[in-house]
Image (tube, rainbow, N blue to C red):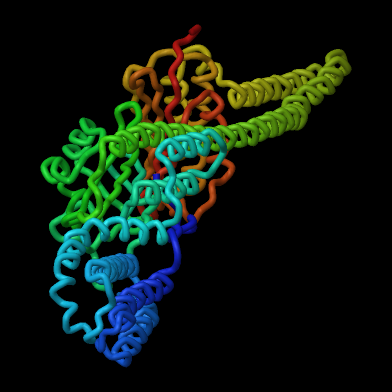
Length: 553
């Protein structure tokens, strides 16, 4: 499953990068200012106030300028974490100085000259505590960037509620990625969807920068259309897994970087040093998606509870993707069913119209042909009655003329009946009826049959009249050509092929005429299919196949 080009993009979580860089500059400036100002407040003669003002202004200005540079904007969160480190160190330094003052019991009166040795023990203690202070400072910075965290139970409950309602899949996956990133303090979240090993990045948070210009593929990582590995995946990027990858992922619930490097190295390519978890989303044994989450190596390791949460999400995600796939298949089937129903309704209307036209033709032929012959015979019989006693020779001559009219009427009625349903088709079957039709054709026709027996009357009639229509089209559009008719039975299917070596045509440029429409209607009415193959200078081949039904079956 892939997202269309017009699908909504994954939204960036938290403040804008420019604002983060300004906040980083302000945080660093505050830390430096605190470290510099406290000694002066305690009576020290250093550092100069000018240095304090210049350093603070420079850090603030650097944050504003960095917010205007694209490359630095992509590192906004890292810059904020570094600023949090500076603030943490400043807090430790201020605490150390305050502890030194408390240890000394008084403010330094000598400008700080006698302040050094008493300050060393608390400063060493503060240095040891600086690492412990740095971790919560970074967590606070991340919380400010990413917003309030969700509890794991809330993620599962919200995801289940959204999937039970008619919420678009794109929105559901986007919100799931957002909640995961906030709850687990993740650096990156990717959700890939698809089937058959061909996956598409449905959600990527944060979205990666565009691929570098001039790079068309990924050397050393087959199956990935990215320039720098999966870490540069963007929404809409594609990933192709091999059969071995699919077999390996079928055994995993939550895979870490070590396992992936051994069994599915493609998924860790381009993610050096990241804490990685890949969760397959499966249903009915098929891989339908992947949930990929990352943390920095400086972040806490994934806990067992977090791995259980990811495994449960993978199971639910597989079920959701499977259900959405079934829904999509059902919608496609309904569209096809409506299309077939519309075609059937139009075909039935054409068949009814054709039957009405055929009845009118038969009525016209009977009126203009046999009926006129019979009226003429009735008049002739009255004349014979009048002449038989007066002029025997004239009566005999009239009787001879009437005999010729009777033969003409019989021939015309036989020809008319042949067009309605040929007696030969009813009595001997398709092979003999088609041989007779081939004999009557003005073209050179070669007939090949492979022991075709008798079939249901409607099947034989549809195939016979389809062949007649094909012969008439060939005589009309390919005069002087040679025609081959092949009739065969293959696996409960009756197959007819009519091929000529005429001039042919381009089916993309020439609309189907009445002849092709009639053939499709006749064959389609008994559940068969028909195809017309042609090209300029390559003749025409009409191929029809219908389910065979034995006579009387």
